[in-house]
Length: 160
Image (cartoon, rainbow, N blue to C red; front, side, top):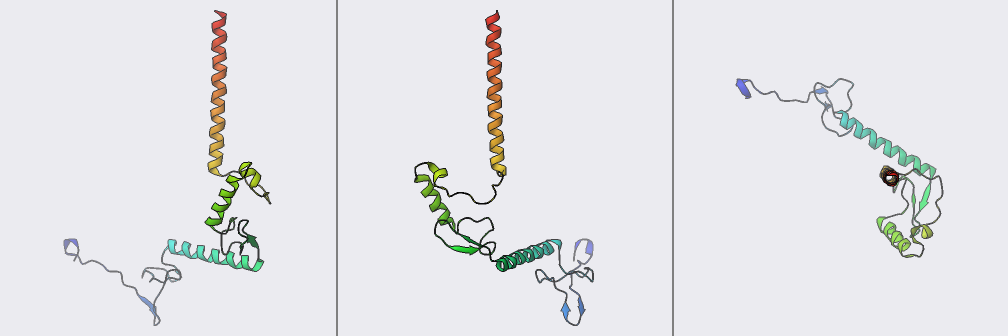
């Protein structure tokens, strides 16, 4: 019994027909009794999750059909782009990525001399790098402004 002597309502899954309760196509859970006859998913979150899974599966299938392969510059391992690893993956594993970084750091000339030439279009800097560039430019503008102010102050003292 609930408050004020009124019995609590319980959700009961109602079967549409002789086959049993209606089930969600995404998670397999029961649909609410108040769900529309055309309802397929139990919630919008379940529908979105199912859509993302299907989109990923479709992308993998297309990648396998195309057969685009990538090769790790460190160990030579190859993989199908977008299936085994991310599309943007350069190395086959964190171990190879770290090994390459350490090798580049120890070579004379630093990272620029050791890193192989970039093939393909250059990408714009990411948001973190853009923020860093903006902060550096702001710092230089402030320094220039301070220098101009100091010159003006010195020239006004010289006139007196």
